[in-house]
Image (cartoon, rainbow, N blue to C red):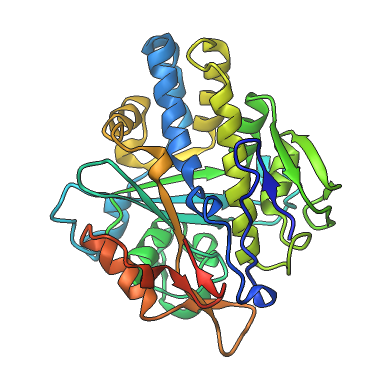
Amino acid sequence: MSHVSTPEHRSADAPSGGRGGRGRKRGRTGRRRTGRWILLGLLVVVLAAAGGGYWLYKDLDGNIDGVDIDRALGDDRPEKQPTSGQNILVLGSDSRSGDNASLGTGDVAGARSDTALVMHIPEGRTEAVAVSIPRDTLVTRPECTKADGSTLPSAQRVMFNSVYSAAGPACVVKTVEQMSGVRMDHFMEIDFAGFKGLVDAIGGVTVTVEEAIHDKSSGLDLEAGTHKLNGTESLAFVRTRHGVGDGSDLGRIGLQQEFMLALLSEIKKQDLLGSPTKTYKIADSLTEALTTDSELASLTSLADFASSLNGVDPSTMETIMLPVAYDKTDPNRVVAAEPQATELWKAIRTDSDIPESAKKSPATGGSSS
């Protein structure tokens, strides 16, 4: 399978995923890195505010959209954790219209949650775990209120990434809470246009692929070797699925893992605090594409929240794919694997260590983390 290498991490392998990948295991280091771009958005905003004076960045407040999750969901939610642990639902949205239509994603009405992560920060704020939910997972969608005030009835066996287009982000939060029993304290969403802007703002990301990737659907056409990708190319890279492995979403998750490591490596090389102009450009591109819950919808709120995470060491963050198994009726879809999924969510609810048994995913034939 094609995968990305970086100078710091050449040996990481992407997950095989899909039916053709059963029995294969993913590289241990790479599987701990998915979703660290979640913190990246917060980190850049904080660096911006600290690097050049808050007054330089105050106008970015207007870029951030806010969603009042508490008002939308009411009391029909899991109880808050008795500890000071935090849970954040982070979505990467596929809005295939407007600004995103020019990114090679097509011009299709509506939007979908292309990437979904539940980030758990235990009490003490010294470590973090991110649970990746495959978009092809069949779930029970609860009854939700749509943006126009109408009611969307509950439905069984719907694809997870369709919930967003059916009723918006609040319904995604409700779906995740009901499937996990874990209350989401915060919500963040970044769309594809923002992803493109981030990569372009830092001057591109260098990746190395060991096998050629030719995907007509995403427009990605790379020969084996090292390439510096611009924002549009990077977007195609993380979205490609037909040009890598067996074309499954599980395989693409692995490709995203590797790219995010390369992205973080690129940002690490740059002196953001020493370049207020570049920092502002990065913060501007991120905040324009950022939607959060109403409590976080300002630079000061984001900065305060990010400051509370200062004790988290990114190098110890672990990402675990929700344990899934192939659906018996439709092998092109997956369902939560039991009892592994229940064990995983229970550990997060109770701020406990996640047992190794909860990291096993039958669909990949090995560890899901």
